[in-house]
Image (cartoon, rainbow, N blue to C red):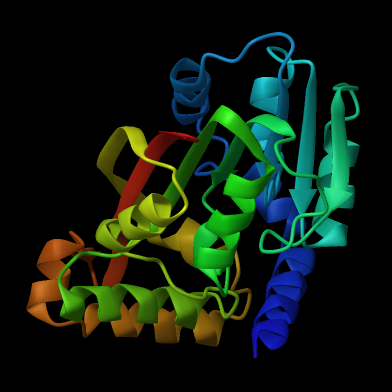
Length: 256
């Protein structure tokens, strides 16, 4: 089952590799600068960026550290990212599964993963592998979309993400992430929960190119329960969805 999910991830990101490089959400400068501020990277560090996608985090950190290994399960995505980042010689690209990393234990001073874990079939294996390759005292910084703690809203959120993107597995709740991190001796050192506004047209077109399917997803939003419309701040004008909001969680942990 997990192999089928990972194949869908590879197909989706191969097809949309350039959209993720250009994505305004993924290329948010304020967000990227905050990563550097939280990590306080040092010049002799070796950093791993898991599921690098368009390489935004790898690029951000490359000027502050010795070496960045940018990994992704999708070769086409990684190849495209490497082409865009030719001017950053200390970034090395490795095709790798986040749940089975091809690196030795205690190798990295820091590990990052941004807007990707909701694509992983086994978040526990991802956290286990992250803890394994991280040096004692090393930093792990993760940013991802998270589900509301309310079960009904959790279900609604993960449903609409999957409808839009079949490579979506599940966005976990913050409480679920905290349990996993604690199990692998990665206590939360710093955290930030925030709302992220999404422009519907940009969000849906990133993975769905067919207009009938885009319209179907839009109708699903329009017909959403009032509880969901309120929580996700769904804005509708003239029978079209303009924007909505989702939850995002940013955490910095230190390996014990």
